[in-house]
Length: 116
Image 1 (cartoon, helix red, strand yellow):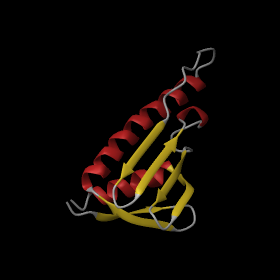
Image 2 (cartoon, helix red, strand yellow):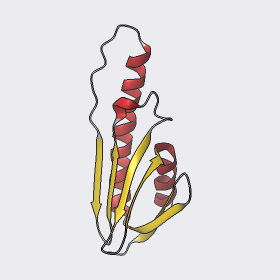
Image 3 (cartoon, one colour):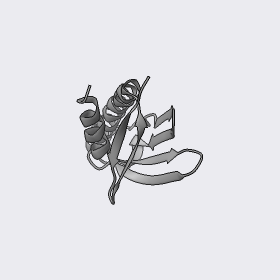
Image 4 (cartoon, one colour):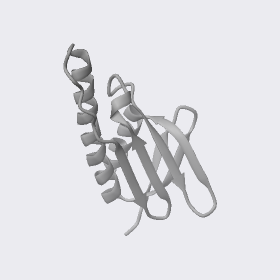
C-alpha cells in the first residue's frame, strides 16, 4: 500500500508526511464526530439554564511511516470554528508538537481525499 503525502497547513508554515487514503478517511470520520460534539456544546452553552453534558475528546492516533496524534477537547471551545487541536507528528528522527486550527485541518484532509 502506497502513501501519498498529506500536507497540513499550520498557523505558521505547514508539515507534510506520508499518509494513506484509508487513514485520511478514518480521520475525516473522527473529525465529523468531533464537529457534532462541538456543535452540541455550542448549542447548549447558548441556551440559558441548560446543563452542559461534557463531550468526549478527540484522541486520534495513526501509526505508519510516522506517528500522528491529534487531540481536541470540545468542551473548551465556544464554537466549532474557534476550535484548535494539538497535533503531534514524530518518527525516529524528529518530533513536532504544535497547535492547529480545526477548520484548516478539515480543509486539508478534504483536499487530500479529493485526489483519490
